[in-house]
Image (cartoon, rainbow, N blue to C red; front, side, top):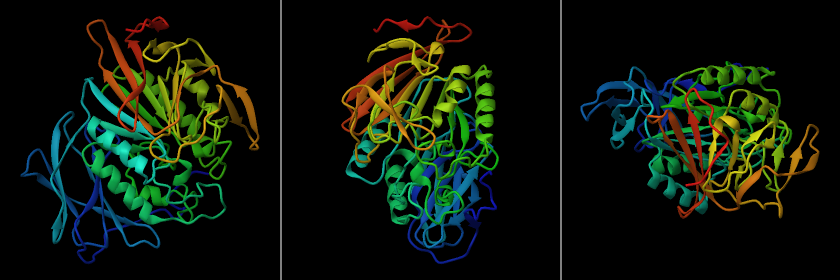
Length: 448
């Protein structure tokens, strides 16, 4: 069964009301093509008259775009969004959110470039509204990423996380988290989430996603009927977000939500991206870990069903959350390491996929195994111990990824450098991946 509009989805309408305070928590998202289409989202405490976005290349704006307004059951906050189309690639724009009686500050945003260029993006998961999350957001703000890829478990409004039959949603947690990420970078650069198990919320539709989808504007170009999936491209990097709740062996609340169609969509999407001459790097993100030695959740055999696709289409990075830690694998094929790449080393990425757990975004940290050992949750919920020769680097505290991409140089080689940094901004792991257009690279390159 696919998740669709018939499942009591988010209520969508424009409604009159009273002016109540200024617009808050402005956030940028991608449309189906972030070179030409962006979204602007924000919240107001209560209904307002005439919510709009002024949008243009300077402070004269030139376009006034009316907003759609959404609400969730049992909560007074209104969530507004505007889709801005017809933009020019790689151009800076200015926008201002307003309604009758109040307006927010003017903000600046940039569309995705038409051609490859140097840029940095960020990635993390499992955040919440904690002191650790605030520290991570300070590091993020200082990094000024082109966009941020979030790997699920955004604010923990429903602590049950799809495990208990009925949870209880603290809607205030959503509003605190939206303000947190808006102030750090999301008002200027897109926030792009994959869905986690804590986005499954009690009373929020058949699959529990209605609260998440009401507040977060996704690109909308994923599997029909499963709006938690999407893809997009910035320069020579393609992102793909997959819904791991559909296949997880550990948390089965939303198993088979796609009726098997998500895997077919993923195969089509990866095939199209790898055939695209403008795409060098493919980065796939989902919540549950394919490979992790953390002792609370470990590895999930359900998401490992996608590994053959990652091998087949040469996915460069797979980024997960769920385990509240950092871990990097050696480059893998069929789940086995094909090389040893130490911190500071380089790797010809066409020969193996690197898996990263980036779940240190602010949630309470989980213990790691004393040795590189993993437990794999299999169908039926049993946890099977396994050795983990694939584990390359581990860090058990709050952290995030800063990933820098350089376009192909005169020799046709492009680099993608993953930096793992702590809540103080200190780097503790680094690996540089290389790709050469039209030519496979040798396995490991010597570290600089």
